[in-house]
Length: 101
Image: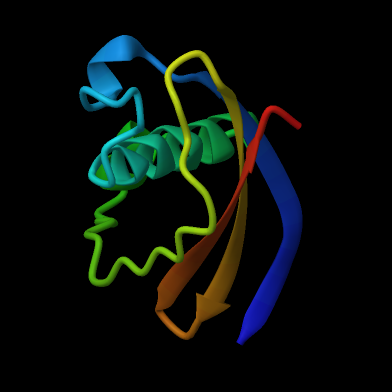
């Protein structure tokens, strides 16, 4: 296992369409935010999904575990900190979500 020291933080504003009638973000939205954060992670590191795919690499999501500690609401600003851990031929991404700082 190799822990990469590079981290990236994506800044996301919660959109109305991502919430339910109570104004709370639907749980399925977090996977979309993680995808956005992962894309930004690669781009800021000097790569892209398109570059990796052109070289024959794929990046399927094999597992997704989320521990929800408090709700996120419409109007909040979310920071998604992304880090990567290499495990042989696989990579694992870890995300930390911070709401309004």
